Length: 403
Image (cartoon, rainbow, N blue to C red; front, side):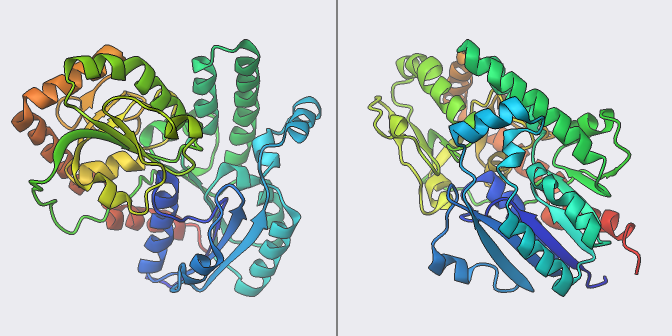
């Protein structure tokens, strides 16, 4: 396989590997590197996802290049209001445009001369006209979500009328931005078949190859007798769908669930944990904040709880849990994009009563529930192995490269 040169642009440093977005970006970076490609990573170093300088120096030692640009892209009320009134571009895209980042990009384009440039966020598409002006590289966009769907679904969950109106407006603006950007790339890599259909229906002529999150599964998970039939959730809480999901679960589901199965415990963790969660005092519930080792956190817990109501894309943590033999209880939206069948690979629950019923059944029927978890491991082996996914992605890209 030819040793092509690829420049990957990310809207944050893909570290630590404790949330789905970072894990998905890291899998792509490592996938190209493992395939023998020369990989150069240019990442935004944002205040929101800051990484210590000593840690930065040790990241990605095997890449051809790894550079970062410090960026303050926090949401600020005045610029957001000005954007809302005077611009058709969504504020989310405007926040990711930075002249220092563009200058660094220009330097790398001239020195590295990539064959392929891959963007790991739709909001980095603001740099695409500049890229096309200075490079003839194949342009690739990885779609972690259909962003306008995420914000539109969030709007439906909000009761505050002014906030709901703003989110609906934001969703509309993001949709216009997304659909225009999709048309300008050579290759699109949606993370699910469902997302691929949305992109196709937008009218884009760009080539589309579905690229799910890939799992490394060297061997079947061992039966861990220290694993307790308790519930857990782990995810970045600065991603609004996660915070909304946990808030709903604790308010609407947990009081009923704790009443009928008082011995059942629920643990949740994640980066940027709000103080409102940290200070909760709820019987049977433990908030651990950001944990240093996600694998260690989930090791002794059997049931992944996924109460997502407004997400998009694919839930990396679900695939990871399935690969490790966990039993997943999730909403339909949470499982969107994963080719899993309810009752065979996971338990489905779309309301409070559904979650209570699913947990009760699992605790009363552990052998059958364990068989469902085993089926999920087999699903990962068949459809979500990293080497197979990267082979398909590289094949799609190489059709566009002119040697």
